[in-house]
Amino acid sequence: DAGVIQSPRHEVTEMGQEVTLRCKPISGHDYLFWYRQTMMRGLELLIYFNNNVPIDDSGMPEDRFSAKMPNASFSTLKIQPSEPRDSAVYFCASSRDPITDTQYFGPGTRLTVL
Amino acid sequence: AQSVAQPEDQVNVAEGNPLTVKCTYSVSGNPYLFWYVQYPNRGLQFLLKYITGDNLVKGSYGFEAEFNKSQTSFHLKKPSALVSDSALYFCAVSSRSNDYKLSFGAGTTVTVRA
Image 1: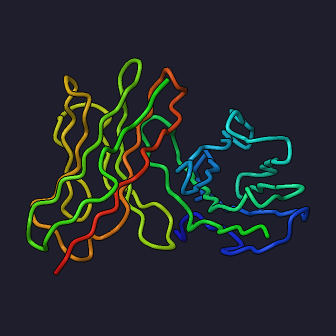
Image 2: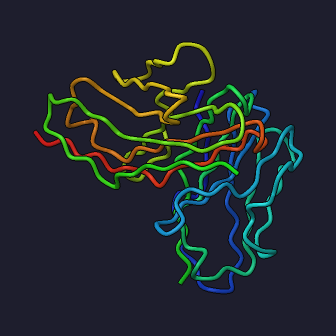
């Protein structure tokens, strides 16, 4: 298995632009998680899905952030409009079961908003 | 609410010496505990987990951790550290009371000198 795949690996954009981050979970994993990592706040859970349905989006910082999972093999995290404070590394992770199973992380997307 | 504390930002050891990375947690109910490692510009990699059963958990790359309920701790240990163990280590906890969402500690940077 190729593991969790994220694209792009690096994104540099200007303030006000729309940014879309993409994730392909491991096949057979019913849970998908989006995290954000910054020096100031560490690793934060933004949102997670079960069987393509958003379960908990309480970590999404504001309405500029949105996430979708149109099918079992693809999810997007969109920021519109982007701001410099959104600069961070965004990770996608997937698992079979949130209780006992390990979450497998993708390599991350490093976002820089100028 | 649940939380994880990693009291040491950095741990420095000589190669061949024992390595300990400390972690304490706070949850309502039974905890599920995890250790992950992150190498530069990479995603998080799973090391080991405690769900139930034996308090001593053995994981990847010779690491182990001991669940101590009375001290609410889950310290990571390795008897003989390698230079290649130099990385950022995260402790994480989940629980039923928090819908099994993972909460991560701030991370501990381990440096193993030759």
